[in-house]
Image (tube, rainbow, N blue to C red; front, side, top):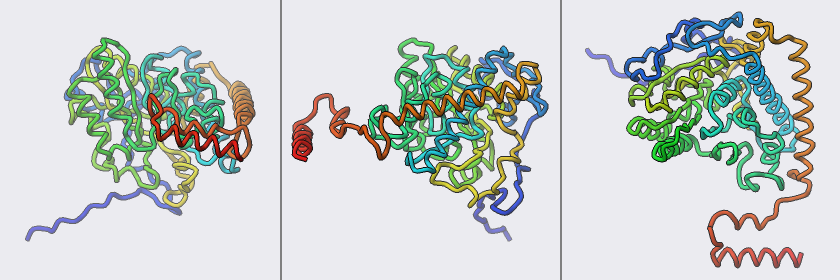
Length: 413
């Protein structure tokens, strides 16, 4: 008799109180995955979506055809940006716990994804980030005080108090507004890239989502349009293993890689070690050149790990082993780049400690300036009349009446 079908429920590798288990993680040795020509057809490079592009080995040596051969000063800049991002995150996390900001989302363990990619792209390339890509802002030179003011919703808040904390934007830096609705940035990036191609520009767009957000319909809409029109776009899935408290297997990662979804649409898919600064940088350069030359878009899966909570509203100890991140087989991105630089004789523990102290002072000074523009409890405060602006080109009569009523109430009070 035929066996009855049974519902398959993806397994979570380890729960609180259990030992961390990463035996399911498919790895490739550093330097083992070939680097194809940028003109290769997606169907001819399926191995990129199944393997794992790695450059740095466990000893910090750079190996293989993806080695980008960056100069030591460039590597030191990357290290500086990643470390600054981490120190900024740590300070904002502690400030949220003290009640001075309402909400925060850090990027512990994922710094290489944003920083290495930002440094591999050009300033005129348009970035469509998710809410864990603050490293893009740092790498493009955004003053930290501007990010802090957005978290405080004060008089220097770029969003004028209208957005959840961490939903930054930066027009001058070509960084699009972050949305609280998951995955909207993917089709937006494709649309921007299509427009750039129509205008004859050689700028590309890049966007990021978490692996859980790949279950959204916008993910598939973006891939279809990118494929049909060969949009010059890089679509990044940051597989940090957890969509809040849900393991990545529930988003489909148990069946095949997220990068493997690209070839199904005729898009090149690449699976890369997201904690390897050199590998991320090299893959991004390859994808950007592919896009600029008309060879088509690329879907990149960054295999990384969310080292801390999803947000300040989350407690990861309730759904995974407390020390999980310490056992992650791909290590820590900052430590790995630091080790590589030390192996080259271009860094030391003393220089690293000095840089850490310098950047901590920078973060502290930025916070001191940010609070001078107002906090959640202390003035100066945002002008409440801002709520009527930036929606209509010309304010309609009903809003003018409401604005006038508010002014009258404030003058009477």
